[in-house]
Amino acid sequence: MPNQRAKPTLRRRRLGALLRDCRNKAGQTLEEASTRMGWDDHTKLSKIENARAHLPQKDVAPLLSGYGVTDESLITAIAGLARDAGKAGWWAPYGDTLANAYTDYISIESDAVGVRFYAPTVMPGLLQVAPYAREVIAATTTRTPEEIEARVNVRLARQSVLSRPNPLKFYAVINEEVLRHEFPNNPEAMREQLRHLLYLSDRPHITIQVMPTPVASHPGLLGLFNLVEFPPPWPPLVQLESIRGGSFMEDRSDVKVFENAFERIVAAALPTDTSREVIKTILEEKYS
Image 1 (tube, helix red, strand yellow):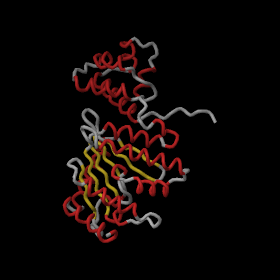
Image 2 (cartoon, one colour):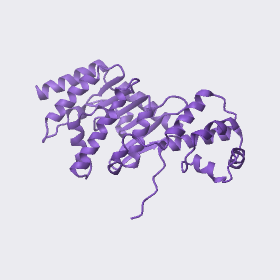
Image 3 (cartoon, helix red, strand yellow):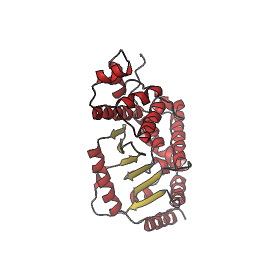
Image 4 (cartoon, one colour):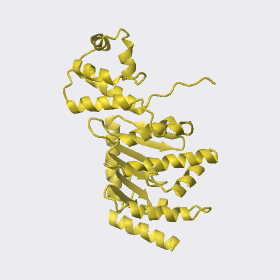
C-alpha cells in the first residue's frame, strides 16, 4: 500500500486560521500578500493557511509586518507555533499505534494552560493509574498486548503536564458510577485508582467533583467532552471522544455552548469537599 500523506496537524490548522484572520483584517488578497513576500508561487500562502504547507519561522515577522500587526505578544505566539507546528513530539516513537486525532490532542494538551473534562463513563486519562488505563485500553481496542502496553505508556507520559513547572489546571467532573466500576479480573485496579484520585485532589491546580447518583438532569447526559484552554491569542476548543477516536470543535459559538454546559454540570455536581468524602467512602466500603 502506498504511503498516505499525513493529515494536517491541529497546530498547523490553528496557525493557518490565525494567519488568514490577520490577512483579512489587513484587507489583502492571497495574491497581494504573496507578491509582497516575493513568493512566485501564489498558492504557497493558500497552502499555509489551509495547513497543507509549513511556514518557515523566518517568514513570520515580514508576513505579519505586511499585515500591519504590531502586537509583540501575538507575533511571538505565531512565531512559536510556526516553529512547533511540524515538530515531532515525545510521542513520535508510538506513532504506529496512535490515531492522528489522538496525536493531535496530545500536542494541544501540551500547549494548553487548562482543561475542563466531563467524565460520564470513564476516568479522565490524565488522572488514570497504569492498571486502570490498561483495563480500559484493552477493553476498548483490538490491539496486541504490546500495542496496549505502548498506549498505556503514552497515557502515563501525558500526565507530565500536571507536574511541569507551570502545571496544567485540570478540572474534572466524574460520574459516581465511574468511581464504583469494578474490574472482575483486577479488583486492585480500582482501589489504586481511587487512592490516586484522593492524592490528586489535594493539588491546588487539580479540581475534582463527583456527579452523584441519582441527580437532576443536566447537559452532561449527552456524553463526554473536553474543554481545552490556551494562552492568548489562541482560542479554546472542544474535544469530543467516541470509541472510534476524537474530533474537535473550534468554532467560537460552538465552544461557548460547551462552556455554558460545563458551568451547569459543575453546578449539578457535589462540592469538592463532599466529592472527596464520597471517594473516601467508596474506597472504604469496597476495599477496606
